[in-house]
Image 1: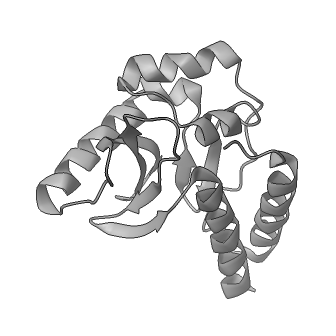
Image 2 (image 1 turned 135 degrees about the vertical axis):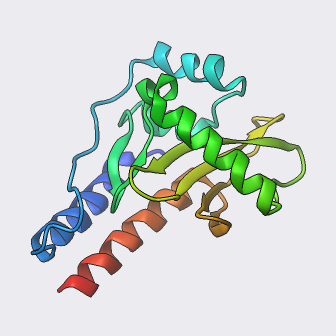
Length: 173
């Protein structure tokens, strides 16, 4: 279930982020690098905070990059240290507010939504449903007042973020 070659995906993302930084002449976005890999024991601490097992693909990502600030525009993809911060608590509250307004399909065998990323300045939040069965991947759902996009797996989500960064770079060119 784990992606075997994050290095290839990181190379694609870093190329997209470089293109975006060059084309962002007005300084619209933060342009940050991925964080160093997480210490394996820190990944287990996420489950302590969220009361949910960590999706295997997301855990595998964290072993290669412990989060990525400004993964897209001003949206930060959380690393292990982010799960015990105000940013995480604010993302949880935003998810509660959205769920009060809009029903978000979780899928069979999935329960509440766990934030894995959020915007620093807007209402965008990235979530994964808590899985009762880790044998199948959890989707990643991008919320901003309602559902914006849904990716079948974390690696599909990451590929989507590469495409979004390339699209932003193209639009600013």
